[in-house]
Length: 406
Ligand code: ASP
Ligand code: MG
Image 1 (cartoon, protein in one colour):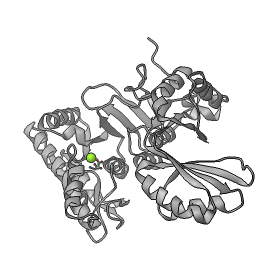
Image 2 (cartoon, rainbow, N blue to C red):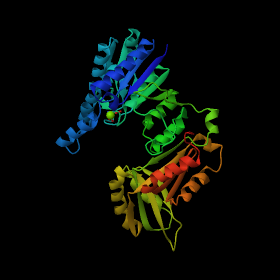
Image 3 (cartoon, rainbow, N blue to C red):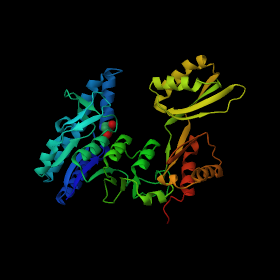
Image 4 (cartoon, protein in one colour):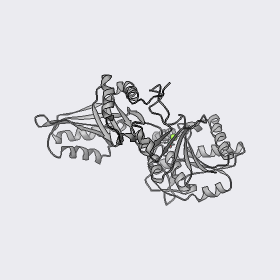
């Protein structure tokens, strides 16, 4: 019989009805003879609500106390889920992160897991209990409560699976799995039976909101098999795993998009050594994460530099750039918040040529202008006008024959 770690997100424990459905599902797995550890996040919007409460009291709430506060969200979920399980006759016990020895560094609100003791989980499993562990939290070596950053429950699940050498880490979602494109945008998007860790990482980084990227990285490093599957039906979902030969035969696995970036263009920058170094050092020093960069060919000693940043960091980036404009001798700054980044991802790109050409042709045929391009070994991204997103994703999905065949 296997040891299974199951992770349920906040929306699947948002009310009593859903909580009971989840509990029934867990009880069924336990009844089938498997040992089960459940990791759960805070119900519904609880974390956002708690943050809002703190912000009513202080513009910049103390981070140690934020962790004490935010950890209560997950503590509600584990207790309620254990209550639900016991009411169904399924023996269960809930533990907070600190109680099962999830030890982190001291970086409050975005701590990293250092180790997991796990002894308490193993003992409860040996007693035949379902163990319900609070996601998103741990403690410092001094026993101060920490949290792992937004979406951090995914990471707890994978780390617990690694510590216990679980057979699989199942992520229960309100979607059926990982798709070739967002089914809300592309009508014939297809559920993928399997994707590699690297593809999942690129998809997560380029806009697919299925799994937290840090947790996929962790799973890759420890070889933890992930199964992304639906909460409210029994269908098989998508396996995230080590790359196989068969995966390389498929050119493209998916098309993703991200409308949360903005483009900043610095105009009339002197075309001489050290300018880009200066600009991006300033941005780096102020903690702004730059995604894509493009520099035009110089004209009469001047050129333009454009880059994209997450929209949440745009204000910070603008401030840094505006301060630097004079010093660099540039002529001005333009900001475009209406962009969209569309990407194709697939390990098959390593062994197939012409992928970029095919993607660009699909866009050209639809008169969609490409503003920026960037590539990695298994991804090609373009920046386009945001209003063309749906058209672009559908055209590319079609061009690579990714859809379901009716
Ligand atoms: N409750 C936390 C959050 O909303 C952690 C999680 O959901 O994974 O970010
Ligand atoms: Mg949450």
